[in-house]
Length: 496
Ligand code: SF4
Image (cartoon, rainbow, N blue to C red; front, side, top):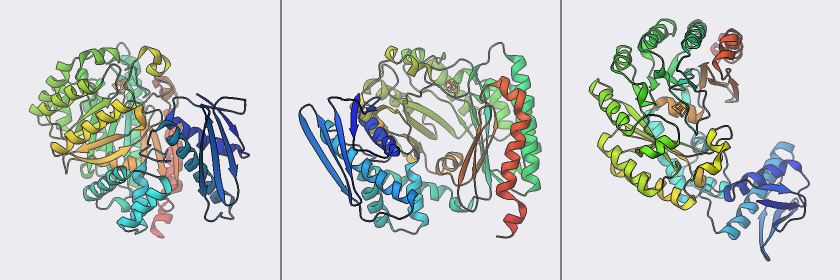
């Protein structure tokens, strides 16, 4: 979709126009060349206006600017917001599509609700602010309220955990690579040499970071093993890894929650479940994504539906009492009938938590690169499936406890984590709400350094492929320690 843009002097305003247009159309290209679709802007100190010419019709919108701040950055923000509103308005008129998230294109909506909470805004004020500033629908605001309330019930000291950290450990191997995947996930078959060198690098990183945490008396709130699939490695390697964690991390037995993703059922064995039990792993994930075999084949998951069910029962039998399952709405070839089947099958298992993702087309995935090959549900059908998930979870006693959005997500929907009350993942809350530093260890692991004082966030990522990781893990460990020193120096902490 090409749209000709007129009257936008400031280059930086092109981006918000693009982001809002992308909510309505797949891949919008904004151009100054002549075109049938034209957006003509007029921006003054008092208001932003646009006329959208399309198919012989004109759609107009204006947004009054109450007060333009002196300071350049705040000034830009106000103008950007006004431009986003008028673009949203004319495109809503033109397409008839209502955007439930309004002009909000960020990925963590609930952070806005926490901000209101921390500023002691009452419920009414917070709703009003979200509605007027971002045009978020009442239903989505209610969803945000419910989530924030659940998070604070589960982690009452959520706003006081900035001087603790959580640790993410990335194991970059999987049995095979799924078509929609952009995670660091390398097929493990025949790569034993590479796995061993990776694990020795990982042990080194854990030890150095553990030493730093001990020296600086910084506690660990949660640990999360992700990847890849952390259960792709053999039982003995898992055993050594968790033993090492208990040896090198400070007060490991007091960590509030340790999760290991066992996403691919084809990696789960009784020996590995024994190891998970031996080291008191609190929570695992076994991910069906779909219960339709054809879909699993189409997305390259190479395991069967029966295997998911069988491994779930095995994990249960062997004592795993907090199991999460991930589902994806909008997988190729799937509509409401297939999704209903997935919900019916889930009902037979009743995991403690259920994460409902909406398929997103990430640039680097095989699925995006061969998009024509994959037929996916349209906006209306995706919305229907999301509603089905909402109703199903409510009926079965699950509550929503975290949510995030992604770019290029089918139907501009969201991903929602549901759990039986009391079984919510604390790590998921920490990573979504960005309330504390997350130290990423291992391949492709992203660290998020959050200044305990200002809340300012700095991202830092380890190398994504095992070869580069094996060559450079020491250097990356040093860099992280340097950043931690800056944020948590002992004088800085004790002087507060
Ligand atoms: S199992 Fe998960 S991490 Fe592994 S390839 Fe599939 S989507 Fe990626």
